[in-house]
Amino acid sequence: MNPTIYKLARLAAIIAFCVIVLGAWVRLSHAGLGCPDWPGCYGQLTWPDATHEIASANEAFPERPFESTKAWREMVHRYLAGTLMLLVFALTWLVWRDPNANRNVKALTAVLVILIIFQALLGMWTVTLKLKPIIVMAHLLGGLTSFSMILWLMFSSRRRATSEPDRKSRKIRPTIIAAITVLVMQIALGGWTSANYAALACPDVPKCTGQWWPEANFREGFILWREVGVNYEGGILDQRSRIAVHMAHRIGAVVTLIILLTLAFRLFKIPRLQTGGRLLMTLVLAQFTLGVLNVALFLPLANAVAHNAGAVLLLATLLWLLNKTNRPEY
Image (cartoon, rainbow, N blue to C red; front, side, top):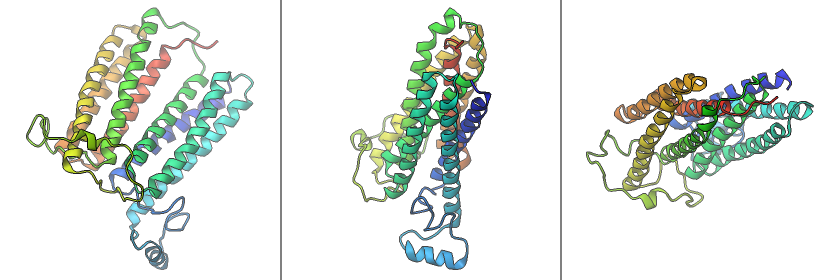
């Protein structure tokens, strides 16, 4: 396959990672509605800067007074996401022009283009529907799916060794797939926790409000679709519902920790995958620690963003391990 495809896919993967982490920073710094319109910001392609522009912005959007620190963060995120979209289009064009690209890779890029366009729509709906939790979570999962597909394209376009994975490597492949499934479910729970502003619903750890099992409303906490037209910034759930969401994420964290550590120990026994096992163990322990510190330190911004980045790196590591157990392409 054309080596340019690999280089472009690698660049796209790096930018996709940055878009996801930057999106977490924007959301956690409460700048998700820093620009109340889309795709511009207060009617501009950048954001208001001059005094008269700020005055006009405040007049046009009296319900959302202009805040420079929030507006530029949101717009930088949009610019970077737009750059990623252009890279995906370029990748797709190169793959479909490459006579050596197989049908699977071409199909992957076609789906990726559709997904990245849908991601842009989710970005718009995140603003126009005022941080509706299901849209915010879907936007996060869509970003992770796009990142995963770009990574797989990068793996597929790289020159592969012709040696077959050994029997042990092939045998552990279903376990890696199961681990990816569990991790994605936990990331979704984390996204739901963040979108509903439930990260500090339990201000202590390991207990929650001084109890091992506090009163919680799981039914209300996990209603996915709520009314349109409500401003969800800051969350609308009551405390019992937020506790339910938070507790679900905590339980999921313990389950994910056990499953990923078990996988890491199994990988230590496979020479081909030992390095991946060590990396997986390091990342999952760091991620669990960051999660505990989020509560213990009352959600410091840098720690919370690092927690989001850690989830992406864990997903990337599992996909890399899955690729190493795949049959080589000759």
